Every structure is written in C-alpha cells, then in structure tokens.
Amino acid sequence: MTENWWWAFLVIAVAGWLATDIWRWLGVVVGNRLDEDSEGLQWVRAVATALVMAVTAKLVVFPTGTIADAPLWLRAGAVAIGFVAFLIAGQRVIVCVVVALFCLVSGLLIV
Amino acid sequence: MQASPIEYRSNAAWFVTGMRGIFSIPAMILMTSFVGFSAFALESGISRTQAVFMTLSVWALPAKMILIGTMTSGAPVAASFLAVTLSSIRMMPMVASIMPEMRNERSPTWLLLFLSHFVAITSWVFAMQHMQSVPRDRRLSYFGGFAITLTLLNGVIVGVCYGIVAQFPPIVAGALFMLTPIYFFASIWASARHSVVKLAFVVGVIGGPLMAMIEPRFDILYVGIGGGTAAYLIDRYFIRHRRFKSSKADPREELP
Image (cartoon, rainbow over all chains, first blue to last red; front, side, top):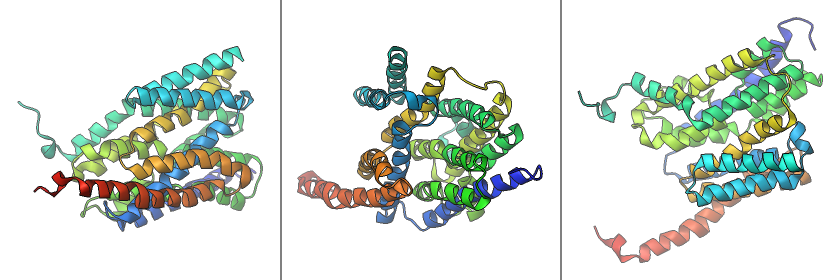
C-alpha cells in the first residue's frame, strides 16, 4: 500500500475527504432549496433520522472490537433500560448515559 | 453595565458562545470516542500524522473506521472510495435538514459549503438542539464556533493520545465503544421537535439491524430512504392529519 510517503495521504484525501464532503456539499445545495416549513424538509428530516438511527442501532446489535463478545441481550438490554430511565427522568440525556453504562459494565463484570 | 440583549451581540460573541459548547456532555463523549479512535488507528497500523489528517479531513467517525478498514485490507483506492461514499450518503439529508434553519437570505454559499464540512452526528444534534435559541443572522457564527472548535480539538486529541493508549482493558474498551450509540439514542430523541423525527427514529432503530440481516450491503440505504419515506407518509396522512382535524374541531382555535 505504501510506495511513497504521500500515497496514504492521497488515498485519505480521495477515498475519505472527497468521498464524505461531496455529500455534505450536495446537502448544502439541496438544503438551500428547502423552506423551513415545507413538506420536502419534513421528508428530508425523516430520511436523515432513519439513516442515523439505523447506523446507531447497528453499532449496538453488530459491534466491532472486544464488546462483540458480550451477549446481545446485555448490550441491547443496557441501552433499553437506559432509554426508559431517560424517558422517566424527563428526557435528561445524562440519565440515559449513566444508567445504560452502569447496566453494561455491571453486566460485563458478572457475565 | 447591563448585559447586552441577545440581538445586539456580535458574530464574534456568538462564535465564542458556540465554542463554549465543547464543554457540554455530547462534546465530552465525542472526545472520549476519539481517544478510542487513536488506539484503533495505532492498532491498524495508521501513522500519527495520517490519523490526525484523517480526523481533520474526513471528520465523521464511522466513515473513518470504514476508510481504515478498507485501506489496511489492501483494497484498491476505488474500492475504499466506494465503501466510504456509500456509508456517507446520510451526510446529504443531515446537512440538508439543518440548512433551512441555519442560513439566512444573505448567507454566502461558499460559507455554507465550508461549514458543512464540520457536520457529523454530534454537531448535527447540537445544531438541532440549540439553533432555535440563537438569532437567525447569528446562527452560522454560533454553529461555526462549536463545530470548527470541536473538529480542531479532536485533531489535537488524536495527535496527543496516539501511542499513549495502545490497548484498553476490555471493559473500558467496551464501555467506550457503547458510549457513542447510547448518547445518540438519548440526544436525538430529546432534540426531536417534530413527530416525524420520533417516528423515523423508531423505524431506523428496528429497521437497521433487521435489514442488516436481510440485505447487508445496502441495508442503511433501504432503511433510510424506504423507512424514512414510510415514516414521513404515516406522519403526514395519519398523525398530523388527525391532529389537524382535532385542532380544527377545537372552537378556541377559531378565535382571533
């Protein structure tokens, strides 16, 4: 992979930088044509949220690294308990983070 | 002297207010994730300079993981490009959904294009949460203050932490990995101001893992475009329709 020292940087610039920023630039172009109260923006919001949450849920169900050895019920259960606690506590983000991590770590210590 | 009313605060003052956002919980969580990333980069044989360059130029964490994955497997540049491009399509609706709230009639397009580089999930959530409380013509300064500072600071974190932590104990590594999705679950739900966002949230959470088992190559795309469209249609024709009818039936709405 490394013929020259700059080769890796070129790969990062093309396959990383350009590959991500073309979508951001297209987003600016599309977003410039949307009105704040338009139906088009409602649809774009729905697509963006579904995409982000699909990526997020996949991180929990199919993780990489050492956490992949932990059982699925522990990972999903910790997130679910944290989320319910977050809803009960009046949607305070820190409650979700603390409760879910507590469940996960104590589960990892026991299992 | 009294504190000046928010309308009179300058762009520079709003930029600084945005910068202070890096002391928020979401920014702290992201910085922790980047400590984890520097360990991952080292483990994968990416050099310190490359890891920092990647952080500043690509910025989005999932795209970087995929880029490293394809680079180290020796795949041709075109294959890396394709994998990262496909995984980053979500950037387009993410940027498009915050632009109408962020810009004003006088915002130059080059500035919007420049600022869009700093959009990733954390800054997207930050924009959705706080943009409404900032005067419209100061929103770009506010967002720039937060998002540019966050990117640069994480570049520094990767540069400094690279090599310090080669490997975490399994429990710490696991908790670090899970921190990001846990935070996204709570913050995206909390920042949802429209019923369609909550509906799309549920569709994405269920659809993501489900489609990953059925069609692992284009799962995210199917869930995003198909599931997002379904959520939009249900919201428009059932949820908002019903609310519209019930608010119509409410006689108080008819009063001036």
